[in-house]
Image 1 (cartoon, helix red, strand yellow):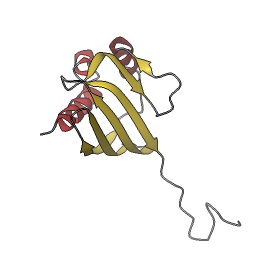
Image 2: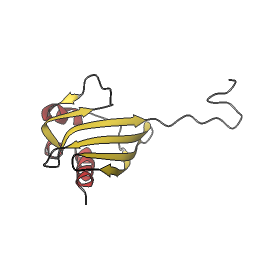
Image 3: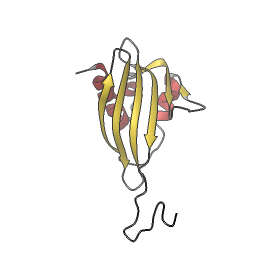
Image 4: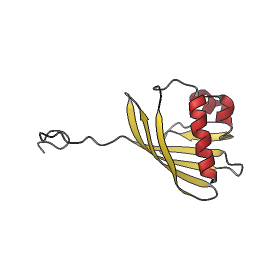
Length: 128
């Protein structure tokens, strides 16, 4: 298994458990968690990440994620996360790895699906 795959397994485990020790196992003490590439205020430091991780979110997210590409210090993960009854996101994640395999910086690139035209010709672009 690759370093990024190991990290992703740890991330998914920590996401399910919300246990502070599980979160600490995947992020360095001075890690940064960026919710988007241009995040004006990324979460910085393990204590803040642990606190953020414990916040309520839509129940029961279902993730289908895989490592797309990696080298020794950077892993790129792609896939989607579905919050049933709430939201669906396509994801591309940057995981900047420390030598010990924990993330020094994590950046989410997420997208919502495009609206599809309705069968009667309505929807996106109708009447343009």
